[in-house]
Image (cartoon, rainbow, N blue to C red; front, side, top):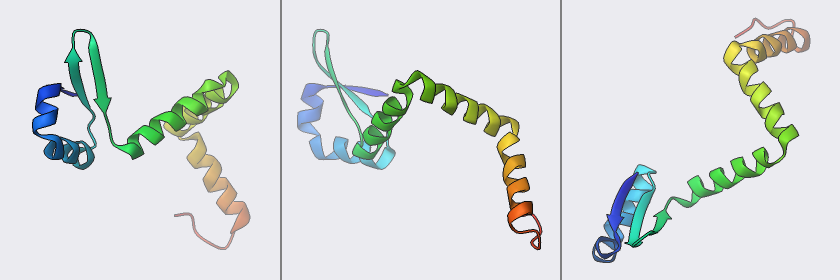
Length: 94
């Protein structure tokens, strides 16, 4: 993540905001001793907040981790292939 000083932000406001949106890369702005802020694309922020919300519940977080594990090991693909065979037996698997 790029880090800039507040003075640079005030001088290059339009270019910096455009780069945050175009590059989808947040920028940290130093406001002085031990003070920083982050500028990020709103869609990225909403996605991050949704992830926090989904992981807030330990039970939901465990289900998500299990789903990711299944996806990475191919279990989900095998299940979907089987569902397609049952639902549409006349079609070949894609």
